[in-house]
Amino acid sequence: MMDRTDRFYRLFARRLTRRTLLYSEMITAAAIVHGDRDHLLGKDEGDNPVVLQLGGDDPTLLAEATRIAADYGYDEVNLNCGCPSERVQSGSFGVVLMGRPDHVARCVEAMRLASPLPVGVKHRIGFDELDRYEDMLDFVDRVAAAGCDRLTVHARKAWTQGLSPRENREIPPLRHDDVWRLKHERPELLIEINGGIRDLDATSAHLAHVDGVMIGRAAWDDPWILADADRRLYGEAENPAATRIEAARAMLPHIERRLTAGDRLHHLLRPMLNLFLGQPGGRRFRRILSEGHHQPGADAGLLERAIADVEAIGANHLSPGASFG
Ligand SMILES: Cc1cc2nc3c(=O)[nH]c(=O)nc-3n(C[C@H](O)[C@H](O)[C@H](O)COP(=O)(O)O)c2cc1C
Image (tube, rainbow, N blue to C red; front, side, top):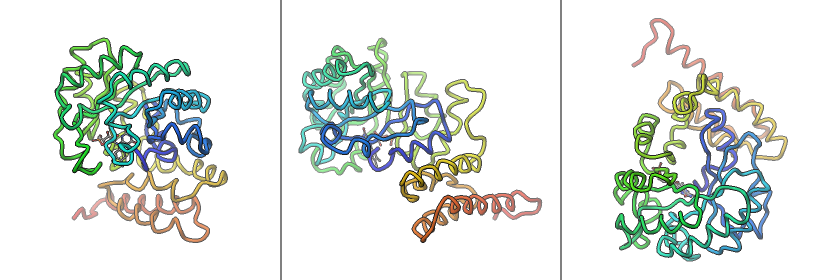
C-alpha cells in the first residue's frame, strides 16, 4: 500500500509475523530504472519474504526493474493491474491494463525472462463495463499462459471515472464468490484473495476456497491482527511476540540502528501508532509517539517512555479492584 507498507512498516510487521508474505508499496518501473534505487528499494535483511510491486506498462522497463529487484534481495515481483488513480491511468497502467490482457501477458513474459524471481499480477474483478466474471477469466487465462506465478484478486471492480481511489476501495461491492469460483475453475493456478478481509478468522474461512489471503487496510489499522498468524496459519510453535509490549520492545534495537543509519524517528514509529488499538492506554501510547517524535533530541527513548506508560496503565487496569468503567 502506497505510503503505508514501506520498509519501516515491514520492519515492524516482522516483529509480529515472520512467515507471512509482505508486499512493498507500488513503485513505478521507470522510477526504479532511472531514479535513486537505494532510496526506493533499500530494505532490511529480515524483511523477507517480501514482494516488490511494480507499476508500469513498458515490458522493457518492467524487465529491467525486475532484474534490479532480484539484486536487491526481493523474493518476488508483482505487476499492479488494480490501481484506479488518475495519475496511474494517465500513464495507462494500473487497472486499465485489465483491458489489454495480451499486453499484460507480454509484460509478464518479459519479467519472467529477466530474473529467476516468481512474477505475480494483482488485479481486480474488472473495471467500468468490463466487469463480468468471464472477462476476468479471459484476463487470467492469458496472463497465466504467459507464466504468471500468482494472481492476487482485489474482489471488486473499479470505476475509472467519478470515483476516487478511496471510493473505489469502498463503493463497488465485494465479489468474493467470483474469486472462489476462479480457484474452483482453475485449480492449477495460485489464487490469492483480497478486499475487506479484516482478521485471521476471516482469513481462515477464505483459505478453504483459495490459496492465499492478502490483508491491506486492516493490517495498518490494527497491526496486532497479524500477531497470531505464524502459529495459526503456518503451524509455528510460537509467534515472534506474545504480547504487544513485547512487540514494541522488540523494535527498540531496530530503531536505534536505523536512526544511526539516518532514518527519521517519525518514519520508524508511524507503523506502530495503532499497536495498542482498543487497549487501555492505547490512545495515550499513540499520542506520546505522535506528539513526541518531533521534539528536539527525540530518539528511541520516546518509545521506551510510551511503553512504560502503557504498561503502567495496563497493570492498573488488571490490579484487583481496578475500575473498568
Ligand atoms: C493507502 C492505500 C494505499 C494502497 N496502495 C496500493 C498499492 O500501492 N498497490 C496495490 O496493489 N494496492 C494498493 N492499495 C489497495 C490495497 O492493496 C487493497 O487492494 C485494498 O485496500 C483492498 O483490500 P483491504 O480491504 O484488505 O484493504 C492501497 C490501499 C490503501 C488504503
